[in-house]
Image 1 (cartoon, helix red, strand yellow):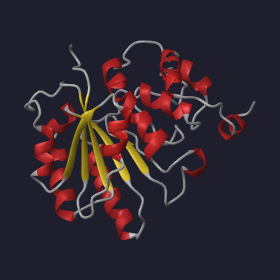
Image 2 (cartoon, helix red, strand yellow; image 1 turned 120 degrees about the horizontal axis):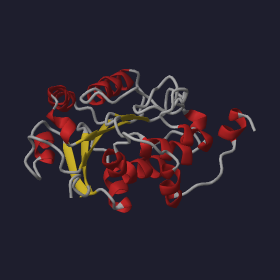
Image 3 (spheres, rainbow, N blue to C red; image 1 turned 180 degrees about the vertical axis):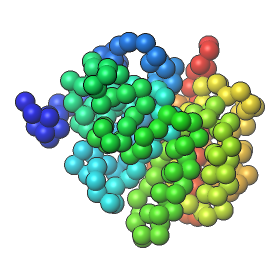
Length: 236
């Protein structure tokens, strides 16, 4: 079977298939905590929220998803496989020298990946720029970017929060997966930092698919949205 055929007619997969798909990616340096903490958010986004699929990955009107927390891409690769962007046969070769699936996702090598990421503080500012560009083009597409709570320690993210709020980028949603790994943040204080800059904020259980869907589909006119998805602590 050719790669093209595999992408055109992927087998039907569900959320229950994700642990098996992730188990195919073996080896060291998997950043397992980073990967598993994002699993439910990623699934809900691609299964219920984002207007994008293998057939529309190059459509200018598609929704965009940016994984800024790119150092734990295993769950991302599993979801992209489940949704037909990449073939399952790629997963066992994860992180090998000739594999397109690296420790950080590469937009040139992996279908469906919008940005090459992993350098913390990189994806959020890019998402702000993309959201502004889409608005300038008159497109209603949404931009969703996933960051980690510790990633918000990076100063570039604070500038992005301020600018997006000032510009009223209501086509931008930031998902903060909070697993208690931030060095400087006070527990429960993430949402308030965004609200102060004019954002709409929701704090939800990061494993509750219904709550995630409700928060991620919200769009408040004139205000960007942040969804703080709380999961089990990294070191618990």
